[in-house]
Length: 132
Ligand SMILES: [Ca+2]
Ligand SMILES: [Ca+2]
Image (cartoon, rainbow, N blue to C red):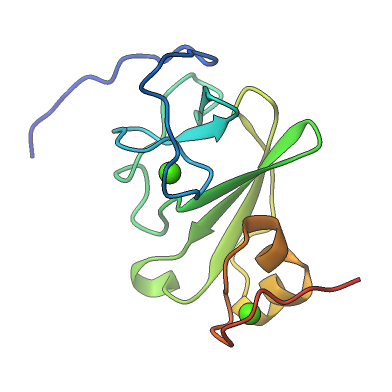
């Protein structure tokens, strides 16, 4: 594996190549995870400023994001030993994690309304389950 020093990214960059055509809440075609918010890229990063990407963890990848009021919810399906479970992060408006629910089952995710938050079918019943 090539050793490459990652540049510290600046949140809030806006340009014409910031798109989310697949509608998963993440900017398309980027090396690092960037939340898509009305044409603006919000970089997911650690509190050290390090950007997060597919290579950040062997336990999860980021697949979806959604804006909830002034924060973002980020969906991290587990990989390898955590496959089939999910983490949800809450981040602030700059893309810095402020809370994590830890690994949860898809039933927990569904009953906590995360299907409708992310508009994704997590328990594979072909329905975006809605809870009051
Ligand atoms: Ca996208
Ligand atoms: Ca469902």
